[in-house]
Image 1: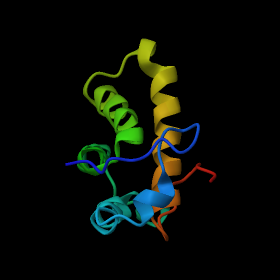
Image 2: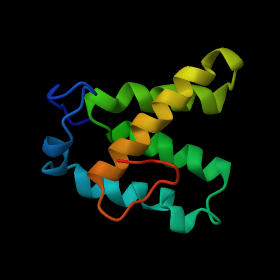
Image 3: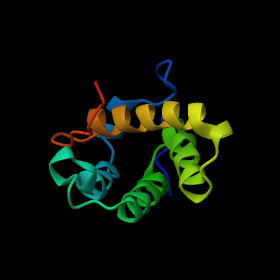
Length: 109
């Protein structure tokens, strides 16, 4: 069950509330393989499974972006490229803001 976040900012997800939630430790543990230090170990297939697992735990304000990424993994199309890039940045920023010590390559928070 996803944590219900308050729409506290323009991004639609209250990171501060999520950081205080009971769901955060499990979410961050699941996100750890995405850290840049594990880039050599993470195959595209494993990344897809990590994103799927995180999407199931994500708060409402960001869950749709995880769904967009999963749709891309299942059926990458040119039409979805822009929305997927946007979702990928939002997901990466959310993970970095929520999980201390997880650095997603190419994401600035």
